[in-house]
Length: 232
Image (cartoon, rainbow, N blue to C red; front, side, top):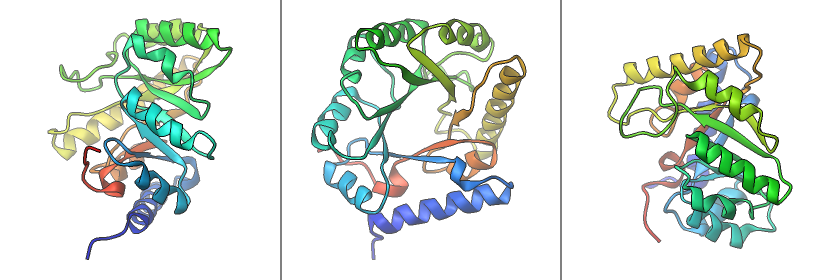
């Protein structure tokens, strides 16, 4: 018998709690972003009825379409995909946008700051780090992140909350664990240099438990909650 979405959500929350407690972390300090990519709005409704209200999308158009349906609901949206410069202005229309997790270039940071200024908003962002130097992934390198961070922190309409990474899907779990450890070390190094980064977004359906044990404060889980993706 196939588990219901509510049961899947409860299972993920329970695993998050167990992972956090196993390394003496407070489970309430870890945010779950339910990734609705290519899943119909009815699944968002089902998750909300189960008590969850934080969701992530990686395409601007899909986020806008869902926002139109839930614009008056208590819902928090995270944009988690590669952001094109010409799409930035559309994200500014979403009042429930809690965070853009995927700032992967100075050009995009500048565009978000510019568009946020136009509508008198302050946008919380994460800087995406290509921790594995994966040519298929976007993001800043470890070497350049401090210099980039200083520049982006000076933008008046952006608040840099922390870092985000996406590890290679084909990587062995032991290697993925090492990448997550590197992310934790990186944020600690930056904070030792008088930055104030509080969020690390890393970990998806296959490895969010490991990510939490290595210091993730945000995990992005889709398949484990919603099932396999379907286009709608």
